[in-house]
Image (tube, rainbow, N blue to C red):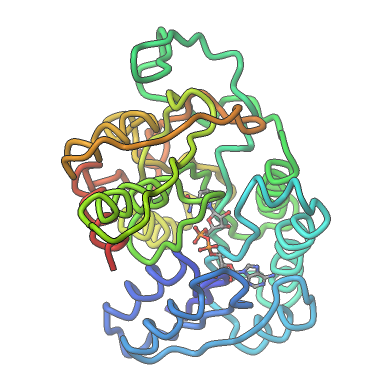
Length: 347
Ligand SMILES: NC(=O)c1ccc[n+]([C@@H]2O[C@H](COP(=O)([O-])OP(=O)(O)OC[C@H]3O[C@@H](n4cnc5c(N)ncnc54)[C@H](O)[C@@H]3O)[C@@H](O)[C@H]2O)c1
């Protein structure tokens, strides 16, 4: 497999590149394309270099020439298109930049493939944000979470799309372009709609990567409590009531889904899939904080902020379609994945 990973020095991309390298297929060529814009991307690149051989291209997905030259030269069998502006909050500060990276960058990939390598498969990382606020879900308020009254398996792909926030619009536009290039130009594109991916090599921030971010807050709170010299730690913040629910997708399962989509490209092409941890791995913010309090034997000190714009009260991916068409389902239980994240955040 000749695989180009845009955003390959990011969290998901570096895990995917490491996995492909670990297969030690002498015929495989792995190319990482990244601008290194994300905090932590340079560290991920250095880590990848310590693992084995691959080609790194320091390029910007917004630059059509860079993208075209790369795709023309490499003629990849598959492009895992992960480069992106990834935070809703940042998209509110700079909608144009968000648009340029997520929409223009994706068009650059699609156009280069359409013109030069139309057989190349493209697997694109979209978002649960394409479904908007999901206000129509009939939710009940339980002590630690919002819960749908009837829905058993989560949200499936028949749910109407509705783009909210610049990030939702840019991810959603690229998502629709991907599907349309399969319909209209016969390209082998696949769309994955994710909510929360977590695990090692994620450089979580206040704005993105909430599982890693709260694990870090808990670890630092514990360290401050056990130190006699450390200054007292101000409370951290939780947006909204903390009862919003997501399903936790461990990065190893995400990587597996990307590989499975490529291996089943004949059935996956032209399709959008909700890819998440599923109902068994669902958790609210408060439930994660309660879990961390028990696990680290501490009482966490946090305050609440107003809800973030368009924060869904409940999103859990119904993975049935992915199971049926690409034989994929998540394998990592949330408890195990959180342990993995605690280890990573304790580095
Ligand atoms: N992690 C999640 O929970 C999650 C959820 C939903 C969707 N996604 C999507 O999955 C993809 C990967 O997410 P991630 O968590 O690995 O993010 P990440 O920020 O860790 O990785 C993205 C990579 O893209 C690179 N990049 C940014 N702008 C670029 C540009 N203009 N040109 C080239 N490279 C650029 C960054 O340097 C970074 O290495 C993103 O498209 C994201 O929107 C992720």
